[in-house]
Image (tube, rainbow, N blue to C red; front, side, top):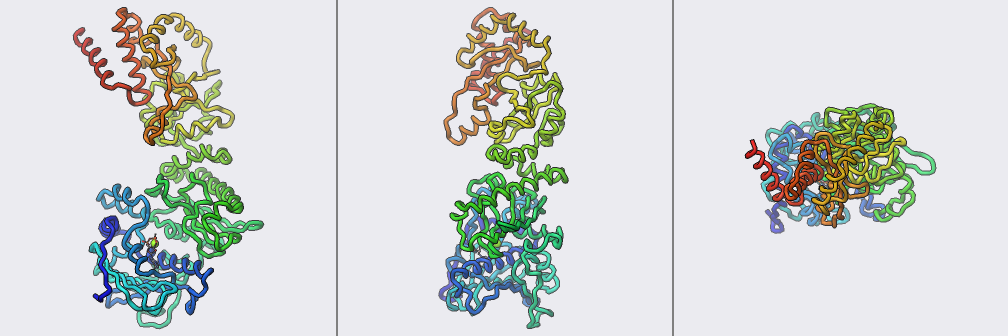
Length: 627
Ligand code: ADP
Ligand code: MG
């Protein structure tokens, strides 16, 4: 080691990543090459971008390239670029830590189960550190563009928790990564193998990936890839395999995309877009600060990785590329936010993305089911927040339903409408904590008895979303746990008369219950919802429901007071027994028990669980002494 050598420890997360990667990714070993070539390509992209403002950064070496070379005897493999390079500080920061937000959360989710971990790590994008899947030692030589030769650095590590960094001299600009391959990875020091990997994973990289022409000694280099950015080629020339590999390159995902849409727009505004629907959700899908957006190019020049201005938040799971002919090369994030051109592109791309989903839903329902499982709740955000495209989003929604046996959401609103009973004017739905809880809900009892279908919702966003939805194809949405059921033509005169009759007959009982419950409820009514349950609580239309209450409470916000009404199933034996109870204190205890049960069924908790259990046990005790 020379005098200026410094030793550094890796960030704890990097150590963890290295350990897991080496053990979990054995079956995907070859991805290291894709990652390193991708970094080389990024480095060239960045330099090309900077050189627009500072042309002398490219001085003497203006053709950006990537070189892949190997030495079978020494068992080494090297990847070199003449891009932006790294100085000492950058190498320490970038090759010793993981900058991505949510890293710590991500590591909490890793289990030590190899298969699961390799899936998760695949989502994380293993990047530079993947070199250690095949190498027991990695050296990085780099000279930053614009720096003198003697300011170059050498970074080295054996993945043992530490790396060293020292100053060295280097004639060439850019970065050279040298892998000292493990014995069991020596197959990668082979021209044929490398060439086929480059062709497979890096064909569409916009820079030539050069390899020696005939074996190790040759001085002739030739490109092993097409070196043409994929999206610039005509659609008809591109094979599905190539689209998939390009996706894996930009998304750092092992899995295949579910669908894509590649379009060239010409005319007043000119741009090419290539949008992908991933096959699974990234780990940080619900993190506010997670990076999202498209890779932005202006006239083939790479500008930024995550231009989030081109798609709305609720389509943040889309990955892809946007190459504009009109935006200025010096476009910045701030500029993108104000630009009216960008606004117009965003609205066109949003439509295109939604059309792609509609096509997937129609042509490949199984893939769409996968999409829905991974991203459904995110798309639901759009149903709420994007009134302009609501008409396009509503048909994309999928619901669990009392009509389906399986809990997998597969009912569309059109399915529902087609199955509506004659005289039915509403689209009935119920929101609960889980589909299972929804199925068991007392609110469904009479509707089920009448054979009326109810959509079952259990995602966190559902109450919020349904608050924005009024109707679909002229039929209004109706929450079956609120207000009047609005059965309209579904209710015959006989059952209406029966309810009126019951109200009359039970007038005294209802009053007694109201007196016993006091302020807990706004009103006591005869129920048209229940069959097997003695009572249920019913909110009015505008009240905040239990799902929203919990979300508000969890985020520390004030939860508005609501006072539900209670509906009584006057035919239920327990209610008949209540009616027959003369002693007022006993009546009061029983009425509170009925109320708390209803509260439990509605929101999953009661105001005073201890009291509730005490009351219940007292009653059980009486039952036991009676028998
Ligand atoms: P990512 O590419 O997703 O940022 P990586 O782990 O692949 O993550 O790389 C980490 C960082 O190291 C890069 O963001 C870049 O700053 C730096 N880096 C890696 N390879 C190179 C290279 N060939 N030239 C310049 N910088 C590089
Ligand atoms: Mg990378």
